[in-house]
Image (cartoon, rainbow, N blue to C red; front, side):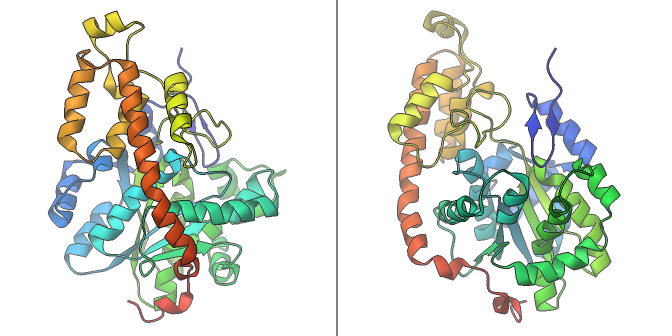
Length: 381
């Protein structure tokens, strides 16, 4: 019997299937992205991002309102984040690729919150190690080529002054019983854990608070973070601001096929600092395959690309849709073997990782230009 998948902001257990994602979205009160939403996005941007086409970003809250208001000339901004608990892997970076696409297509500001305080509260990790990881993670994110004039990094402990003042306003409306019910806290958990969700809510209305205008916010995030923003949507209107909208993703699957890529298991994912040799070795040894047990069987019966890790990572990184469709068809009928699919994925991943290096070096030189400055938003909207 398959273990029922469970999702919290700190842990994912079980093998997540398509039905689990629909169930969890329904359980959390989110809506599935339908054809009308996709049509609206295409009319505005001129295309559908592959992560939407393949259903990786699959659910939303009030995305339709963001799109309708945008057509009327009403601005919005993006907010997403990263908790620096370890080195970054593809599962961490790919959602930032989609966020960058949204930023460019809609020409909007992006706030990226680095929740170093969360990792100190929830993980057994030193302040010194968190500080080192924070800078490295920021550079990894910026290696995608974000523009400094539209991208604003907020490190919680460094921007604690402005964040805390707003988080206090949020915390006044969140009871301990709510935190226990939503996040599973107990009396033995630190009070810092109870307070943290108030900090995470702040960027969802911060530009409105600074500009004095009600500016809507769209938050791309993985489904495990939804409880935080469900609470935020309940509280933020009480402060006089619009509820934040969201666009929600599935997890990038683990190399091994179940769960998600994990920072605690180096063999569950492809890390950004993996060498081409390491990438190939991981794929060949650990990647979950949709192929058959023998080459003869695969040539006769074909593979199942839909559950194949190598194919699914390949299609996320390959921009040529016709090439993807060709590989899919040939792999499915057995013209391509599992080892060949893994090698193709390894080459594609290594080439992608190589493209990140120049932008990362440039971001390191211009690091301060990306850091959040409250004064930039006083008269921006």
